[in-house]
Length: 302
Image (cartoon, rainbow, N blue to C red):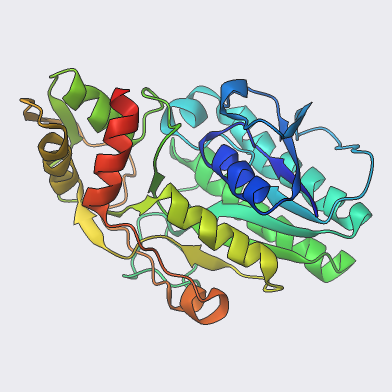
């Protein structure tokens, strides 16, 4: 099997490449390295330096495409708002068009952010979302919502074998220390003995999935013929304040928690209903938050 992973030099993409290599696939990483790193790409993966917002002209057969390319951290999408929209729009179009031309299965990575600040809890795939289309986070949220619409249009008009996964908060090795996401930020601060900055009262909730679990779900979706969307995430709901305290505990840090101003349009609650993933993909996460944090903290400190 020959598999193309767009965004394969990023946090999640590089772990997908690892898993595919273990399955003896031929893996091609397509990345422009604006947010990913060549150091993340495993040995044995072919690298194509390319921008997915331009047509993808890859030689040879392609059996599967895992489309992950998109700035995903707040530090990136707030710095590159137009590029984020272009990647979610044009980039998804070109990945889908490659799947059409190669007659390949494609799994398109969407996000829990399509639900916005949800009025339904937990969030099921049938929920349409509550999103501010002009707020600072909208460049990421709406890019992914547009990408989902594009995916379903390619299925309807061109018969492309495409499936959508909605990825909830995921963490683990190869996340950048300053990418703006909660877990690496807390770990960096705790290991440096700095206060852990919690936005607002910290009672907003998240559901945190360890990267190995998420990759299993992605590849299960790749092996299926389901269109999705299917939620992938850990349904164990925890407050941001509790995550900060657990981070201090697992690192043995002397840090304290410091509350700072709330983020604009920050969702108050986030928890996936993963019933569909269990039914269709026979998937559920295995790694508990404390175990995942300890494992990531060891790698992070090293």
